[in-house]
Length: 458
Ligand code: F0G
Image 1: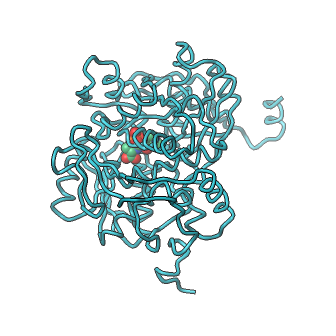
Image 2 (image 1 turned 90 degrees about the horizontal axis):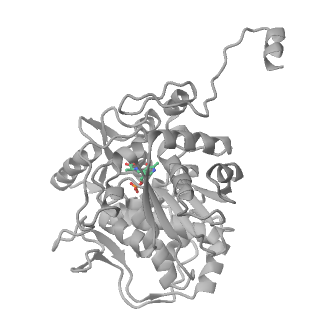
Image 3 (image 1 turned 30 degrees about the horizontal axis):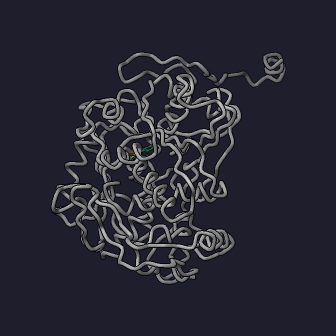
């Protein structure tokens, strides 16, 4: 049967209505800059505060909820077959109430990602236990889907026809999928030669107009902002506050999965710092609404060659980001030297009593292999988490019996080239220095001969 937009199973439609107990004021865009806090209607197409240039966020003044009732509703929705309820983002719509209606929402059943215990990884870093919240189980294989369903919903609400982003690969894969599913035209801008083939392939397959620019992520973001304005294309980078709203639900779902018991630490990789901003905002809002009783500490891990946020946190002047002009890392997803969301991320790390650490290429590669040996696997940027935990554990910052959740941001299959090179001793750092294949696992070529093979395996 042919499906129209209205009866498509990917469309939100009428699921259980939101249960907000009190929302005395309208949702709005608010300037994040504490000295400004200017407010704007949600329907204004702005990415920075028109008054002071600060970052923008969604604000929900006067919102109040009945925590036990809301938690019950969220649990009940897991039993529902309505697309909106089955989404691990829109199930928690009371946490992201920026839409007036849900009929246009396009969901690909994002979120719903597992929390996986990993005793092998815990032993490797010297912890009693560790769990991975694996965002690589998302429809396009990364956490970007949580935010993209919201960004695209806002694009549809605004009547936009074309959307764009610059990306190190995952945002573009996700945007291409959601835009195409929604009938929007996706334009993606990527650093030529510096994203993994898995991610580039996704963008092509999902039908995005794909422009490979001879520049790095930071330079291309500046370019895309100019083009978006000139051509009236809606920008879906994480500077877009609606993307951040969607990524908040990663933390909401995690708390739901843990029966609302916050861990001691939440560890995540830091690139453009949208996720750090989203996680911190979600945790603060859950605390304010009475859904959790305390905030876990955020530990943000960067790659050594692309660690401006680490530089900021370890500088005496936290009001100016020490940009990295030429960021370098094989974890191409986080190869970013001038992350736009740093003021938000700084606030969230400070509020949570958190920390920022950096790790080497070798540490990332070895941690990645260890995550693989758990039967879990992830892409390189995600493995920065375990590498960072190992370092923080060795320094005594994280205690042996700490309750630690690391967020794996992308699927193992995003970057198979890196994996093959590591296991066959061919992986080299951007500096050209060869990396050790510490936990290498070489494939073996054998003759078609049972005796010889049996001999080898004995
Ligand atoms: N992990 C993965 C797999 C990513 O793709 C990214 C960001 C990050 C971590 C860092 O997250 O930017 O919120 O600090 N990828 C972006 C992209 C930049 O274009 O796909 P962040």
